[in-house]
Image 1: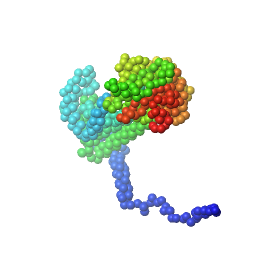
Image 2: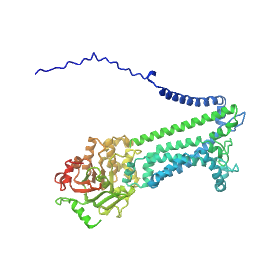
Image 3: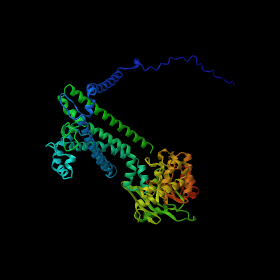
Image 4: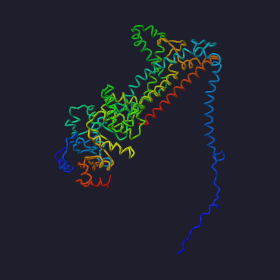
Length: 327
Length: 279
């Protein structure tokens, strides 16, 4: 029996045409062009949007930055256009709203996750998310028609009975009750569902492992919440806070309806005031020339603030994910 | 439960060997059953957890080992619809009906979980003393001493001594698990429950924990759930074998010394399982 040695394979003959990988134009079909076109249009619209706002506000930034950021009083139509009242008003209403929303919202989130029976939990959570989706004009109307009369009748007489109430809050400036305080309260009610929706989720994803571990060490339920759940969820809760703050600073219609629309730096909360967003909305209709540029400049300011708040919020949420990833 | 049924139970469960001189029981289980929303998950568990011994719970998935273990420090209290029947005695006190609060019970019966779960926001030191802090200990000298002692008992002190303030998440998986053991030991518990404590660890980290357990049983009674039969054979003194019954509820098949369970069990199913014929 002879041993047959197979001939070595002949590699030289193996010269098939391998089609080159070419992602170039020739291989594309019409719908790919359409998709690329859509993307280009989107990019152009975005750049155009931001660009034109900045461009239109440029004259104001060039000549009156100081007035815009630090001046009080809005002299329509010739100017000067001081933006301080709006900036201060935005700060006041947003911060008070945030305090209201965080204090109530944190308690609500904790009880949704830990105290409400499992059956109702999803119903409540869905309801909260629906509340967050209610258009703000509805909140504004409610503030104007329901909350304002109630505050005039009940809350303000009670506030007035405090010592130094007048010095602190001033007295009611407008008959139908429009004021910075009213705007703050309505904003607080409005951003409450936003805050609860996110903070509830952040709290709910704290691993059960950690809760059981702390219970197994003899922790009470309250200690578990205070010393394990909240610290673990802390960063995400800050994220929820910043998102709620972003919503409060950008809110327009509700504040325009109930803040009173007076452009004057005001620290007495019972007096009327305004915010950046609300002022833009109410003044735009009749604005001309330099006033348009001033309003645009306020818009740029608001946009930057909101960009910043959203970025911080996203960064915090991603850090929270990292915290949970190591658990 | 009617008499007839009880009689069946009696005959079904093999009785432990009488020859062994048993020490005092740290925990006694009498006809323990756990059900969720009326569905029995595990039943008929009657055996003693003897002091200063390692008792392992073995059996295939679904046989109710973990469910039984979690009944021993009342972790089922949190689960809606969970019901524990029968009696579980800790030093003679019924832990469900007796004169003992659930927080006190849990300080006396500690638990280590399947996945290492140190508190991610706390440092190594804070993790070690977290149980004491939950129970109101504030004095720094006491906490410092407890941290050192418990970390030493968990064979972790030498490697973390210089970085106690570092976040616990910086430790390796095996170190994290030993930190969890230290955290439980800091409470100076009588019984330590361990739910597959090495299943998430590599072989070397596993060996270290196993060595630790043999050391630990001098001062604490250990009950361990394990999937790993070699582990049960290596480290446990007593062994409870559970199996899923026809109605999918786990039940105790046999309880005895580990040696007897692995070498000369009474029930043929125990032999089949330990020989690896199923499971």
